[in-house]
Image 1 (cartoon, rainbow, N blue to C red):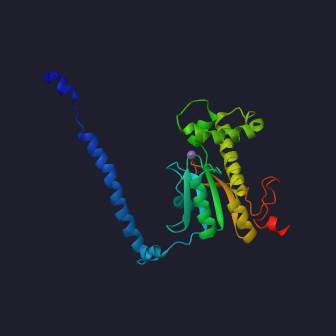
Image 2 (tube, rainbow, N blue to C red):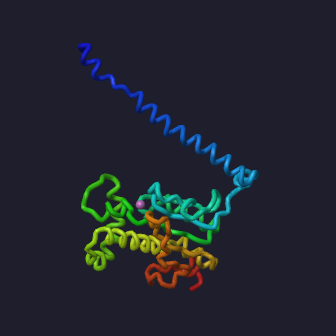
Image 3 (cartoon, rainbow, N blue to C red):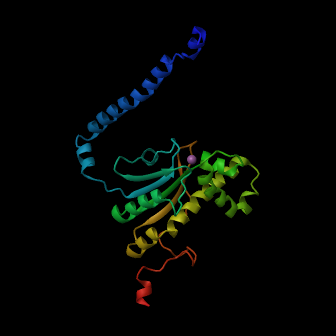
Length: 237
Ligand code: CO
């Protein structure tokens, strides 16, 4: 191999490495500043935090970096149990989501489960298009199903942004419905009356939350094939 060919292969990565180190070190610095700020507000903050958690809320939101549960709701560490995935989809075969839901509902005994979508959601936009994005297409197909269920309404919206934002709302409503269909939520409702499932959409342009008013606190409107009998119902007959 000639010396000119060798030179071609050497890439100067000094600047890349510096930027990489800067963005990483900023996180460590940010953590130290957060600890200092928290201790300034309450010198026992971390002692209390280490003792355990009693969150009242389970947040199921989008993985989008702009919608952090605690910041959006003005809550502190320890106050919100969180599960996030692309486009806040709740699928009844997702072991990860079900485990989080079961733990939150049956162990932590949260009082509110909130499905939080956001306008301009890239996942929902991708699901609305015909493009291929790779592996994620399999995940987004759940949202394509939401589109099909509501195609009569959606096909009549000509403005693409409006159509996307309406699908964002409908996706949240359907995911609330999906959670209510689970045996986890329905069994909890048989035991207690202080568990509500809510649907929200966050407006990134204003920061404000829109409550979609789809809150459910009983299996009454689930539709008869989704409403489950109690686990002891057969024995009782
Ligand atoms: Co999103």
